[in-house]
Image (cartoon, rainbow, N blue to C red; front, top):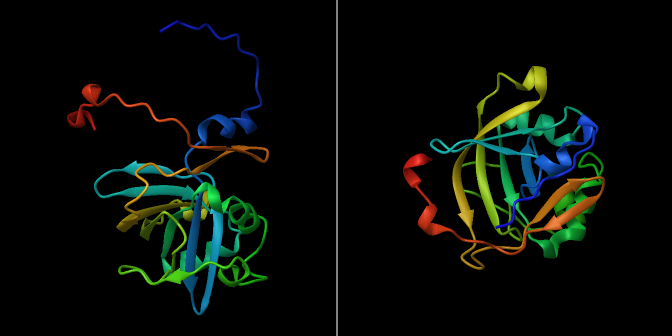
Length: 187
């Protein structure tokens, strides 16, 4: 493989998310006290494998913030590229003004571990409960434990959507495989 030397220029630190956030866009569904919501989220991070912990920031101004904070649970749903228009529209609207399940013709499904609804049309749904709330007050940082995962059998590698910032998205593409180099003991 040819070695490449990149010429680099100063870049605004406020924009580095374009390079660090290419995880899949997720739709976070929540419910509390008779209200439900769906929010589009472009940034989340795996914090631990066992127990399975996921961290994310949810702005206090977001309608989902209090639903999740009060119920202490949510579902992280993974949509595919065929849902692109809905992903954007959900992100550009407020659950305080509309029922997003009805507005975007999405089907809420009951999970087995949490009361927050799963989204039937999504490829995967991860039922989550707040594991650690110490960073919520200062940073709006939620740490969830994934209690149950529901994943479609097919396709093995779904075409997920990834946010690059400034209204730019990419779709997961070609996969490369190096199973002979994988060392599970290093996880």
